[in-house]
Image: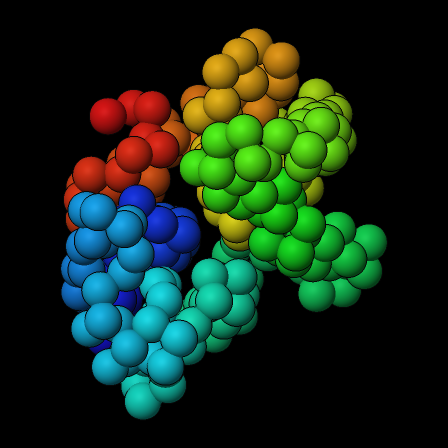
Length: 212
């Protein structure tokens, strides 16, 4: 049985979603953020030294990092689901790009915006650059989704699961959904999927769920 160490309002929500899409049995161990600091509880350090979520356990393997976890689940348990065919080099390259872009590039300006918003006027010199990078990355994603419903075209894959979190967090900004309508449409599609709804039910309240 796969065990998911799940922190509320976190990236681990998409791991639950991937498991639901793959129709795999799993157990959820829930952790709650500190209401004052919003940090993960110390109990997560017992599972993995970083004390972050998600972390999974699978037959003695302990694995952190949502992208690595989702890739592992698809490769090990997917039976060809949620990934392009291995012989399709172009699709595989595109799939790998989106799987790594989600955290490698897309989340950086989003996190900078989140953290500097707590600094008030002290962060003012950084805001134009952060806003520019936000617009650059959101515009890039929006343009991709203007061409097709999913990041690999007409086929839903794990890349869409991985890309969901930066889009969910970015669209909490005022007027973001209006400025980037294809991202808003993408979220409506993914959040209405039965597997997504089942993952939210098992994971508990999720602040980025627009269907709640």
